[in-house]
Length: 165
Image (tube, rainbow, N blue to C red; front, side, top):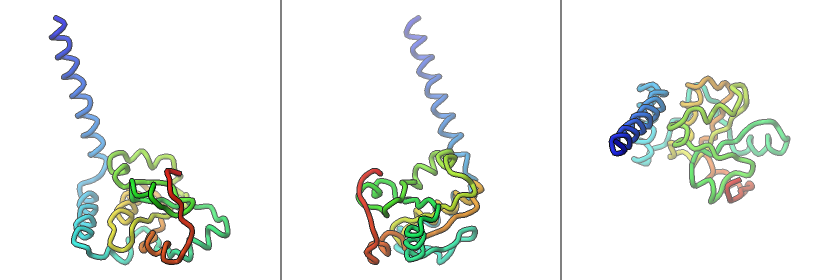
């Protein structure tokens, strides 16, 4: 009897976990996921990402630095994942594309009207343009894309920090 109960509980657990994973993956339309995969493929082939993305405003490092100096209200989001801990733009928050793909609800802590600046490892990196596409799909209205990303920021000798925060 105890063995049957343990097996039933194990089956139930697998069913719940499987359902959760399917429902998370289903949050993104197939066409959108294909766009993300195309960006990944281009990066793998070391191709430049598009010059612009519909629904996002391109922004330069100089503009971001000016906004920072002026204390303009915006959120700068590092989309690279674990690389954030090694070095990131001062004031940036970690907002990993991998985490967003798994769980769109992580974007819920931001207002749809908030200015959100996305960046990653520059023109050959797929992570920030993919994040732009996903945020646009979620209904965010003020998405900016720093296409040249952290390599440009470092080249300009603008402030970076290391660590989790």
